[in-house]
Image (cartoon, rainbow, N blue to C red; front, side):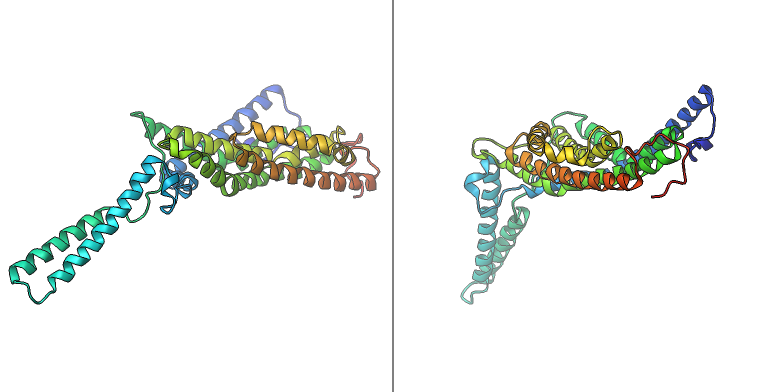
Length: 334
């Protein structure tokens, strides 16, 4: 399985059987990495579920807006009113028990009443309970936990999986082509993680808050765990993938299909295309769509800048494309 650890050189010559053996070895490594990551994620599934639940908890309506929280939220807010009333009643009983004109029996009775009322007040919530997903099936808590652990395992394993894919196709690249392919491959995991972070911190909270609190006076707002986690994970994966826009455009630029001048010329059409892509991403509400458009527009502008730099460097080298016709020329100046 040494081939799965060290990439094969461009000058090495392998038979079809050797290539299949290398592919098998790298697939085994990928499966082992995924299995280990899945085991760790399943072990820490509570922390992962809490992480995904945080945007939902932050969408819990405030107690000061009872009229807009739906019947379930109004019932929770009513419990807060009762809790405060019981606390005040317990304080009143305690004050009466300290009066000097009471008999010992009356004082003991008031003290006991104050303690009972105070215990009842402590049993009620002091704040509006945070929203958490619900389950409706017998095995849903287990299956949903497995699904969330699997998605996080794939996310955490992505850098190693990409390395295995890169190392497998590396022998087909000449030394000059590797100089172009390696930076692109290194950008992929960082851009993906950046997209996931953007989706988690800037897209999910306002999207979930808007969707969960929209027209909620007419609904008892509950959310099923399977649907909520699927929506959250799809948003994160979609944001991670669309953050690959610079890599894709750089690859097209290297292939000679597009360039920076072309991207600047069609920017109006690009804005329309980005709006359509954002509308097709998870979350059909205008808040989510607008927030998802912002990074796409920024990434499009960043791509133009990167392509200008790449085109300028190739112009300085006198090349018409990054994949030049002389693959063996390794001494060309930069």
